[in-house]
Image 1 (cartoon, one colour):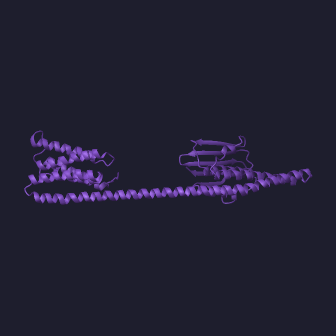
Image 2 (image 1 turned 135 degrees about the vertical axis):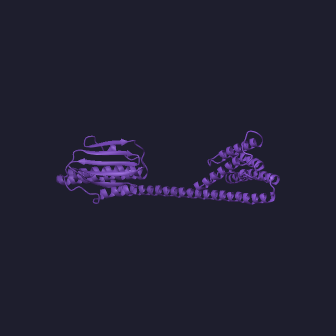
Image 3 (image 1 turned 90 degrees about the vertical axis):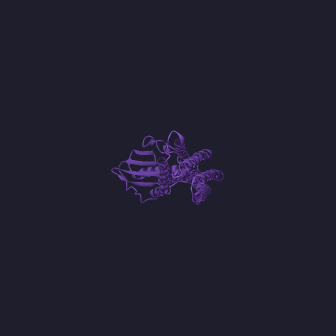
Amino acid sequence: MTHLRGAPAIRSFGVAAFLTIVFSVIATEPGPGLSGDGLLVTLSLIALIVGVAIVLPWQEMSDARRAGGLALIGAASIVLGAIQPDSGGYAGVYIVVVIAAARLPLGLGLTVAGLTLAGNVVVAAVVRDEPGAHISGLLFSVVPWFMVMRLMRRMRADRDRAEALVEELRESRAETAREAAVAERGRLARDMHDVLAHSLSALALQLEGARLLARNRDTDPEVVEAIERAHHLAGSGLKEAREAISALRGDDMPGLDALADGDRVALKVSGEPRELASEARLALYRTAQEALTNVTRHSAADRVEVRLAYEPEGTRLVVEDCGPSVDEAPSLGGGYGLTGMRERAELLGGRLSAGPIGDGFKVELWLPA
């Protein structure tokens, strides 16, 4: 059902108008009493207040309940118009017409408002000295209110439908973008598997053959060692390529515990663990991996602390070593490894900082939840 959310100023005006009607009824003769016309005024005033208490809240309620509350207000306005023609009690018809037009289906709203207006017209014809002028004024002031409120209801309904269509279109476009991203990631995964992974696998096999051949022919040990290092790098590259392919396909990524060896690398986890997207898991893993690689290359530290914190607004990873550097450690702006980590973090809406701290080096990654 369409909602009409009245502005505070309009609601305040409505409350003031209703209180004016109540005070007018109390101040006009015959006033409220316990017998005769006073009892009818008292009962009508109670019906008016109860009816308004039922229909004024803007939350959802059944049409029957709202129509019942309006019927109480309408009956009270008719009785008060008959007993107190000089009070503002008859103005309850305006409350009925406005709320019936704004909150009830057209048929039910017309019925409730029409019966209330007809009752007030009959009363005016009977009790007024010049009924024609009063009836004309009543009709020309009440009927436009009904039409205006129906128009506002229609405009609100059209706006709500337009907003719903816009939201549906936004969700559809977002879903299309997600599907396109998944398709592109699948294509990249296939290309990486068919080209990069196969090439690295072939390279690893060739280097293994070269290593065995060099050993069998008593090649210089330094050459054998260089070939072994190249073979190891090719194997590591093949493993990382397969992990990247798995991430692109949305497969489970290895956890940070795979990088902790218990002696040199210690992993500490805090907060309530939660499921992370594959891109976030890959970013955490790659950042920790790159940071540990830099420790191996640039630091003589014998212990590295990896801290993973699940915070309310995101996930924080800190890799920190305490030990003298064996050479100049990389800064955030230099080195493709740290640059790649920073770019990966920014693509996910996070941030990365890296730099020396006292006698060590610290890399910190934060990703939003």
